[in-house]
Length: 162
Image (cartoon, rainbow, N blue to C red; front, side):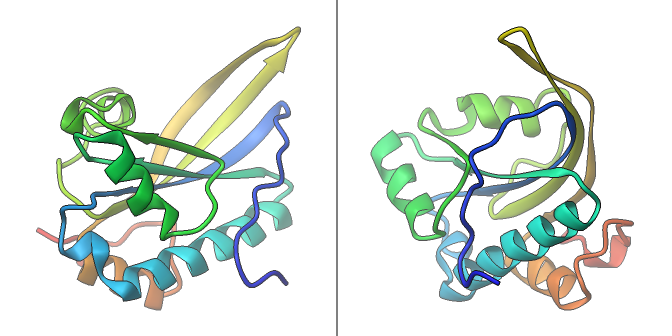
């Protein structure tokens, strides 16, 4: 097994699991060295689970930074992602979707979400259907506890940072 996550570079119709990391270069907890290791291991674990279920897997990094370059530098510490978005602080397009939009949650960093969706790739057109949050974990200690418990996708409220 690889020691660090490598995107597989495919985009095909079918079930997909997405790990979404939300952090910031200006957040103390988002910059904890242990979080880098936790998120790196989580990418590998969820990728392996998705493969075992014959699902696609993607890792998405979202940086809540006003200056895009600062956010990209922050995300770079976490290794490879399939997709990244940075800049415009809380008005970032990724945050508008995963915090304020279709899948609302508390505006806080760091957080990880695991999303299930169906990818439709047909005739050069792409889209998602049935997209839903399986798990949202907010805060370094909550993320650590959730991962140490085996990263269950049937979320138990005891892992939530309130």
